[in-house]
Length: 212
Image (cartoon, rainbow, N blue to C red; front, side, top):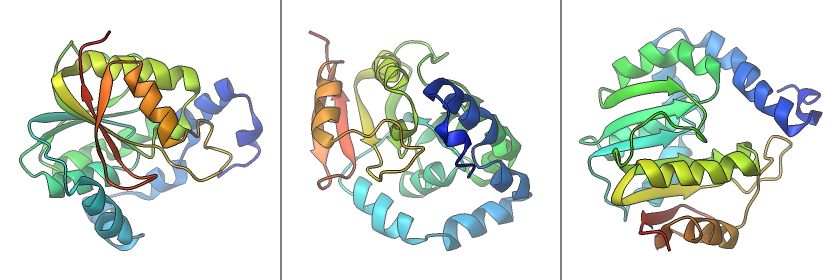
C-alpha cells in the first residue's frame, strides 16, 4: 500500500482506488485455484467467525446486488451461505476486471460483474431483492456514501433488504468512519428501517420502506 498516495485529497484518493488499490494482488491472481486458496487459507476466520455469524439470522432470497466486491471473497462467502441466490456485483476498482472470468467460473450464481460507481448505478428501479455492502463504505467519501444509499433505495424492490457493515478500524484509507448510530440515522433519513443487528459494531440489516 502506497502511504504517500493516501496523503492526497479525497478526490485523488478515489482515483488511487480506481487504478492502484490491491493492483499487485490482482496481477498475481492467475487462476480459479489461486482464488480458492486465498479465500480458504488467508484469514479463514473471516468466513467462520464473521460472515456465518453476520448472516445466520438473515434470510436472503432472489437476486442481490453487492457493492465493492474487490477480490471477490465476500461474494464467494455469500454464495456458500445462499446457494440459491443470484448475484450481481460492482466495484469502482478497474483492476477487478482481471479476475472477472475466474469469479464467474467459480461462483455460478453470478449474473453480472461491473466496474461502476456505487453513487450512480445503471440498474433500473426496483430490480433487486437485497443489497450487501460489507467493509466498503468506509473507503468512499461522505458524498458518495449518501448518494449510494439513495441509489440502493431506488434499485431495491419494495421491502428489499440492505445488509451493511462499515469497518471501524482507524486507517489512512478509511476516510468515512461512522458509528452504528450514525448509520441508523443515515438510513432512516433515506427510506430504510432497521430490522436486525447481529451485535454491536457488526452487520446491520435494513428494510426499504416508503420515504416520508
